[in-house]
Length: 146
Image 1 (cartoon, rainbow, N blue to C red):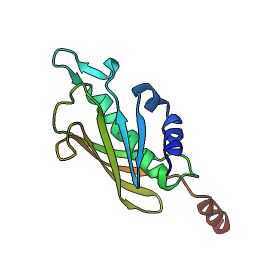
Image 2 (cartoon, helix red, strand yellow; image 1 turned 30 degrees about the vertical axis):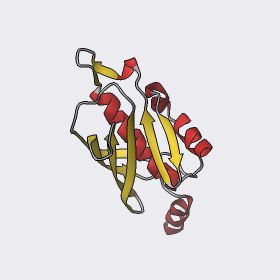
Image 3 (cartoon, helix red, strand yellow; image 1 turned 45 degrees about the vertical axis):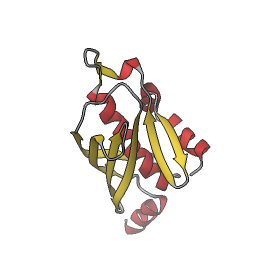
Image 4 (tube, rainbow, N blue to C red; image 1 turned 135 degrees about the vertical axis):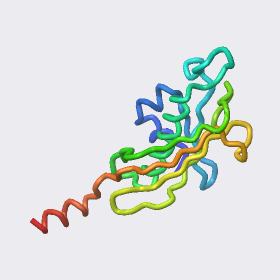
């Protein structure tokens, strides 16, 4: 995937736009960046990123990774998502990378890691199952059965 395609992919997600998420492509690596924005701060006393902003950021990352491998299909839908918050999200850029662990005909299992200063020190980890959209060939085979 080229940088422009990645930017267009993220631009098509309204929630990603609200959070200010940016896409970066480096060789074969695709990652998302949540820039520091005051609107993403949940606790201004510490200050710390809002857990919902971090969770939403990671969910967008998972869905974008699935879409990247199925570019002609609509976005997948989350079925079940678990997030482990491991460290306080500081008011700096946050990065996330997703890995599709297994993609079946209807469901994909995805893991996402979010970090700030070091990939080896994640601030949160997501594990989720996503419902994949039906492929055009799925509809044809269902019509033949009836």
